[in-house]
Image 1 (cartoon, rainbow over the protein chains, first blue to last red):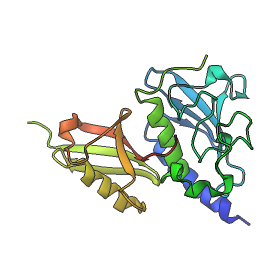
Image 2 (image 1 turned 135 degrees about the vertical axis):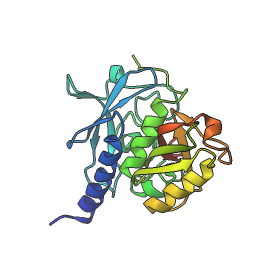
Image 3 (image 1 turned 180 degrees about the vertical axis):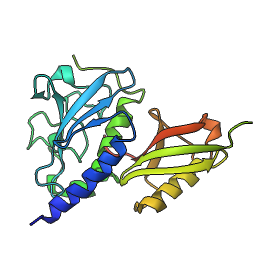
Length: 147
Length: 82
């Protein structure tokens, strides 16, 4: 039987696929996700939604050829959001929490309260998170790859 | 004859919203329409973005931002992240 979390994920993933189909995004059912930045570079994310929405997704930068995650060459830079640690700095990214990922910039956020963290704002759906990343990659804050 | 309407395909936190608006519609009117249609909690903390730029102030019209024809936009949560 589907759990409440699974139902939430399924509904939100459908919403995200609907958006992705309307623009040149690449998204597969394993939640590997490709976005194009304003300089034409494509960045890939591999998103782990285990236990979502009780805890936020883990948004890993990804290389589909080598199947490695979180490598500087596959990671964009340019703002506090596209953080110098190589992690997306937002309460809705599990990798922003130092207790989850040693590279995570925050040890002052509570993972279980991610939806009510003021820095989350209304970014509480998978589509909202993906749109936020897309916007950052196409803003003038974005400055290319880390390496 | 100049096109008087703009078709918007907006990625929102709750999926895709498509609508056709007069080119003189204000950004705030578009946000309100998308929020209502998709059942999003509130428009107060949302911004409309075109090619990475936030469409502000929201009292400006679509045509004043150069939007014409069919355009893809994003409705994003303000301040979501650091």
